[in-house]
Length: 161
Image (cartoon, rainbow, N blue to C red; front, side):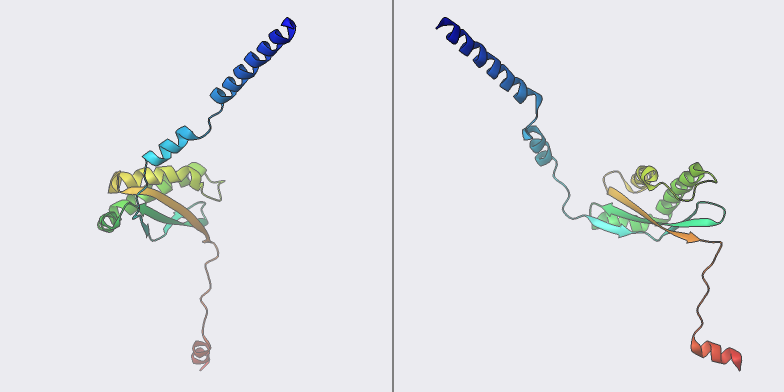
């Protein structure tokens, strides 16, 4: 009988110890939810697309880099419009620095590497609190083969007369 009681007590202690260790080792999300609630996101975000930047990747290939700013509000967008030349200069400087890092063998630009640098440059020009994010994308242009302009039927008839 004593053996059964001792065995039951040992199993109970091991079970409680294992349960306590399990609870302490694994987070059940209570702390994370409190952090998410403490940092509310701005509601009236303003997105502003800038004209594309043309950046050389190789001697014959250029990339048209599309940049979109995510701003806190319309007042920040108005501020950007007033500072557009200075902002474009700062962003173009970072894009050229990234293109130089690629070297002659590069054929594409690494946008994951340049995005944080562009964000920092935009925040420096516009203001730390005004710029929430910056989105970067591209469309590759092959400058060795410029597009051939299309001629209309009327222009063909005029040139033949």
